[in-house]
Image (cartoon, rainbow over all chains, first blue to last red; front, side, top):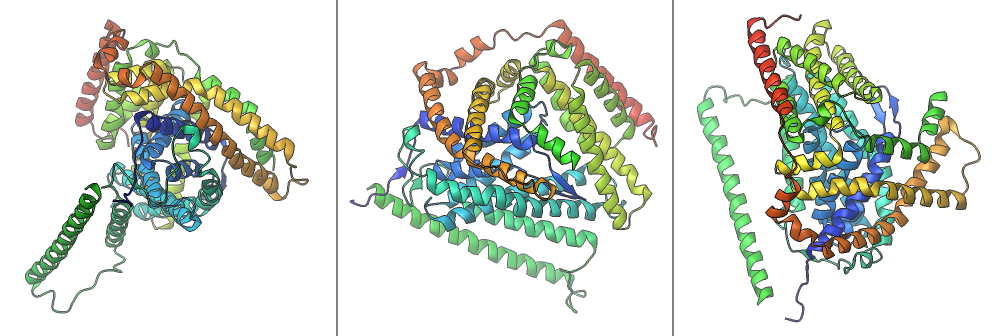
Length: 292
Length: 277
């Protein structure tokens, strides 16, 4: 076949170069952001949360998996261990959420010269990371406080604090230190930095050789579902009863309602599974044609 | 206004460099620092997980007392302790204020006090352990407990490359400042100056990325000529490297002492669950 699609493969040492590059750069920037003071306006904190543009840029230019993991390791080593403020197991959660978010952002970009794609991916990457870490913080308080139900207002207040923090981090830090620098850096560095590592630049629409199952769609979909679930849980906890509606005849035959909803769920699940299987099959056929 | 000025003074690059190098290369000779890294890591693992699931205040208080003792033993710098206390107090304080707003009362303070106790046990444990382990021993301990060797390598590499990176960052920053002009007026709340510096710090990363790319290629090529990735996957090399780790009698003493204390504590806690408020 003449139009054989090139796969983006790297040698072992090229992977390590990307890892080391991402680790040292993001680690260095992390040391500075740890030391830059923040402006506090009441519970709202205007702070330079992190220089997310560094891992974002590298994830878009190189293989996102190694760049993302490298950046997360760099944060732990430079920003935490060396400054003597290592949080232990809490860092594991940061590691996972951060690398997942950066990886997703990197995977979303198929053409580093396309500014709109780069910008959207940068913002989504930051939003995923901040959302996941606020959820983790909220869950921490819920696990840590025994009589959460008994304490009036605690559940709501933690959600408010985390929500404000989330908005601040996405809108303030996200735009200033993720979106704008990434838009500036990615098209400039593209084609310049890769030869220094002894590799070809990523070509347009190149496919990755590994990790294809963890697609951006899967991650974003999962997070949206988690958000919906969390929101529903919150609403039902606080008793605001926004999403609660009762059909007039539901009370009498609750049994049948349960069966009905189960049926609907089963149908939805079946449709999703069948469509996924079909898609996988089609993709497999295409790949087979390519390999032949 | 003074606070802003002081803060800006603090972020002179030279100052940061000194402070960082001081913290990073501070080798410890405390009692805890002489223990085997594996002992400390296992000990830490217990105190990082268990407090989350303990709601008994007597047990938590007992753990807290133990943590205070080990923190004193490991001579943690007062600066870090101050940051820790400040963080805990401000977080809990804001939570309390907002829960008042949502209709809670003074009685909502007590469960939050329990949370504070929990968080402080966990953070004191991590501070004690990780400030008394120097990087070399920490990475060896981690890799003997099964953490990927790549992490251990990154740790030593990070410590080695940090001074060079900082030097380079500083030089590029200075050249940017030489070629540009800083704002004539500081502006409202030093806004203009802050924006100017933040912009430069972001721009500096453009040349820095290119330079670091070159450097990491050299590093990896040098490593590969010495068979680094072969050694990384070879169990014999690992065994040879970790052969110096030895559990001494002081390690066993420390572990068994902690176990005894925790057992007694749980026993006491179930007898008197409400010793404290």
